[in-house]
Image (cartoon, rainbow, N blue to C red; front, side, top):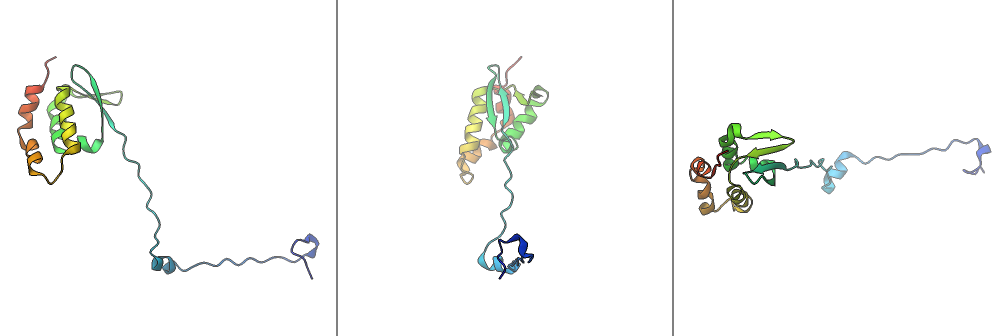
Length: 129
């Protein structure tokens, strides 16, 4: 009898690979995980004369009140060294951020805040150079 550990035996071993049918995993409810996408890094926003720095999620800056703010800043807004410079009052900006992160989307009272004339509010809080 040949030993599998004996190199002089000259017999070639055989391995059998069994494969489960693809439908087997579907019956068990398994599916491959989708690759995780990392969220984009926060945008550095420098605000007002005090040059207060806020790290803001990009989706917040794309939302309606901030999109209007960025459009109103227009030429005053500039991108330098990965930051967005906005010349409005830092307290206004901070309050808008707080509302954006804490506003329940179903509440009509908090949603009415952003229905105000945001352009007039921004003009009121805008700082002269």
